[in-house]
Amino acid sequence: MNVLLSIKPEFAEKILTSQKKYEFRKTPISKADSVENVILYASSPAQRIVGSFEINQITSGSPSELWEQYGDASGIEERNRFMEYYSGKQEGYAIEIGNPRRLLTAVDPTELIDDFTPPVSFQYVNGEFDSVLEQGTVEPSVASD
Image 1 (tube, rainbow, N blue to C red):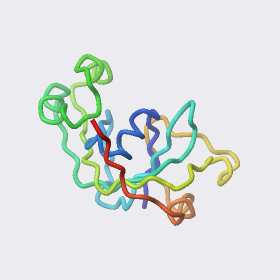
Image 2 (cartoon, rainbow, N blue to C red):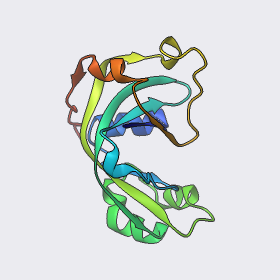
Image 3 (cartoon, helix red, strand yellow):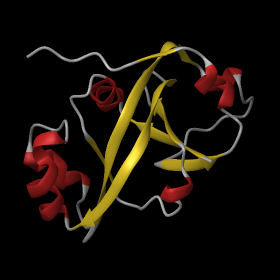
Image 4 (tube, rainbow, N blue to C red):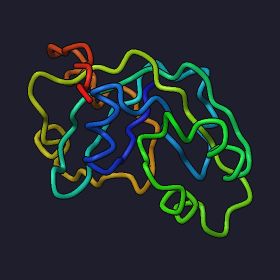
């Protein structure tokens, strides 16, 4: 089983360049042990599937705890922006990103599924996107600072 994850293009790019080591969510991926790949859907304006990664582990905690532990590897420069994302939430989830891979060519999901609707956060998928994962991928390029 795979997960299709909606993510802002700026964060998808940071995952694919290994600048972002953790993805943060308000709701857990409850079947994480069964997930083979997280498929990255870069939301508007890109609206394309751009890559994938594997889940190494998932940690839960309060937003403050997550920022303290993983803020440096979050791909988010400002604590306020991170805390704003979790506004009103007592608990959040940090997904450790493993083996990020960029697709050689970004894919418009409407070419695969006629009535495609991007998930608000994520959705479990079975074979719908297997052809995407079978196309060529490249290992992350290391960002130069």
